Image (cartoon, rainbow, N blue to C red; front, side, top):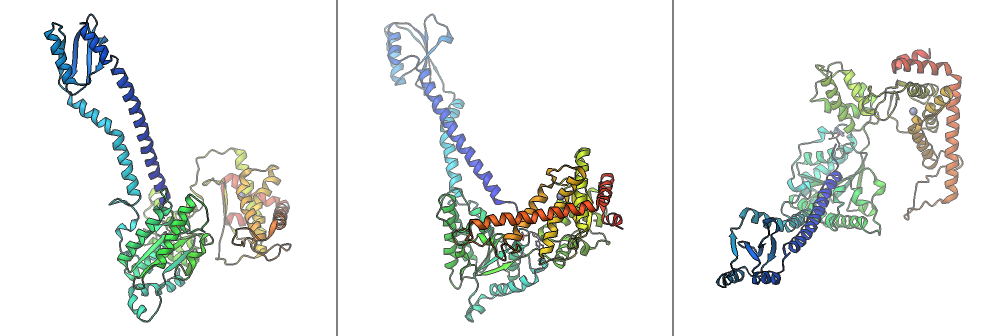
Length: 597
Ligand code: ADP
Ligand code: ZN
């Protein structure tokens, strides 16, 4: 996965802010310093000095070549009490002293050569604010993209990728659809002569890590054309007009190297609905407008295909989706079991896997994982195998890696009080026992009270198939299983904890979706309350909000009661599971099933 360009920008701005503050501080210090220095040095006014000379009160004067500042020592006073004075014209002053000689007024005059080292230092120092301001200016110019070598976008050095469709596992239908684009890019002339209009923009919808960037690169690789890219979040800049100018530059470059692929990641960062707002929003508008202008402005002989990726299609400005812009949309869904197996295969090519490994089994265990997460699983397994000094990656290493990626690292070291352990044991046992008595819920795979990541324990379920639809009964039972943890805490320990907060959060959002999205509440009926009109105001009014609240609460209450009912009628099982957990910290599927025989 990529690192966030937003973060880089933040660091960049921080550096600028620091430089700017440093400039201001240094300038102020220098100004104050200079002032006080001048005042101090002039502790003898020139007229006063002349008066003292005339009154023959001066013993010695020290001058430095090239400086108007002199040191004056009065008769009968020590070296330390020397006063300083400024003479308007050093040459005239020296002559004056010589005149005084002739009058018999002898003043010792010492002329010291200039200390070049100090002098240069002083000069440099006095230029410091100017230099700093200049540096800051250069940085700004660079950021504005006016400088010669400013890093504006990584399109500066475009490369033909060597990624092809072979590197993209699964996504067969999507690839078939995109082969057309590859052909367009390979032989644009042929299509143009036939009068075919080449698509300009394709929007890829999908979660992060599902392979949107990968497939865009593969199209470029298949067609043998350059791939240039940037991320939407890079466009959001501090300086007005910068986003728009970057878009212009990106497309200027694209036109020069056409045919090519332009990939814009996180397009929602610039392409979210235009508002009449100010500041960041209006900057956003400028960038979006520029993008629209560029997309409308291609000549027919310029084969530039823009692919854009987003996870939030609902955020996009409708103008982006008009014909001639991103008029094709492709959803990139997380892979199904077969897709996962293929992705695992691709990413295990350069790994030392032991023969016993069954990638199909790992694929079965990783429902819902994205391609990036699966790649991560294999990488983690290699790390685990190395740490354990295995010759090859074993099935155990892989399973461990799956868990690691799912819930974070096992933390054996964390000290947990006995009370907490007991609470966690009953909580997790509650989930497991309750779901055992719910026919739609998956079988328990493992229950553990070893903390992982932020979770104190976990109950893992077997996932046998990829589901496309979830029934109402299944969702209701999901709520019951989720609330099983809390129910067990209450019944077995007669206290409840914050350990259930995540369960409650998930359950509430499931219940809410049932009511407002999937039309599963009889009172509200089959209405999607999340549909909004253009003004972003729900057209359904306030009364319905109240009904939603009542309906969600009803679902939750029913589920919580049902969970308690199950626990109460199977207390023996709950105690049995909890006591094994307290002993061994973990229960396998077999041990769990044994309890119910
Ligand atoms: P996105 O752009 O959707 O956030 P990426 O294309 O950046 O996701 O995917 C990140 C990484 O995950 C890829 O570089 C690749 O290693 C892996 N990956 C994702 N999907 C697939 C896939 N279908 N086949 C093979 N590897 C994949
Ligand atoms: Zn829980």
